[in-house]
Image (tube, rainbow, N blue to C red):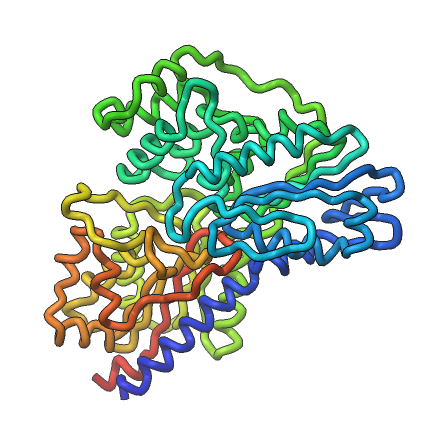
Length: 456
């Protein structure tokens, strides 16, 4: 019975995961948050009088930027965009670029390379130019989503893009959380940590935010370009010290700048700023849970509200939960959201993968002796990207474990090399979606077929 049950569980698990991703589709979220009624532009529950409004500018950055920008144009329509002389510039990954009427989608980095580039820096400079050209009658819409930190780099004077890239690479490889990483990045940027709001001369600046940070801290999402920086130079130095950046070849310019930089908050922006979170991880998990119910499962749903720790620990925990669920009455589906971290081995030993693939591979290792009868477990990034790969994540079930044994693939060998992609690829166990045009952290699904486990 198990060979028939496993494909059904796999199909259902993917359908549940995809329902979660679809619920936070960037175009849908913007359409829900923005509308025109008569002579008013309504953002959330706030009406803005179009007759008293000057120009409209749209700027931003993130993996969801293309869908968000397209939805803004769709809501406003050609006549209103023309009347308000709409101008727009949004930095996005290169594989998200498409032609729009008036908003320029700028290819700020290659696909799968979540790092700042010279093209991204040029785009950030254009964003600063646009917001600085506005006046008090104008309205600026800022579209912010996950990946915005790398897509919108504007190093402070005296710090090069290469300096910032070296810092980002070191902290990411060392297992720093997104909060720790952004604490440093904000202190080295002219646009992060409220810098965009400082530069904006519009009367109103309204940010529509799709959150890729657990708990939705506004100052951390995309490093908070429209939010006052709550961190300090001292906090950034402490992060660098904690991860031994002084031993990693980081330019002394970085440390000198942070030691000299005065602390304290930036001045209040000249414009009135409103920040609205329109989508997050909890929304995706809830939608996935509803889909599970529609398929006949009894789900338990949980979403993390802070960084979770190592991906390997989360994978082993989910495997343990799967075994418990298989042997006990109660929920037969677990939907969870979160974002773990991966500490990378040295580059000479390192393979290919991402945190979701590493998580599932750790679960494979934990279930190896059991065989995973009646269990399907998957984890995927809602943005369609998992590390520097073309996969969103991976899945396991008894069929995957059996095929791995037949091929002589030892999960432990691949796990210690951060080489999960090479393990799952020949097993046809990768989740490959391409860009999803959204980004709300990761979504995991565990499904149980108790009848299958009893028949083996």
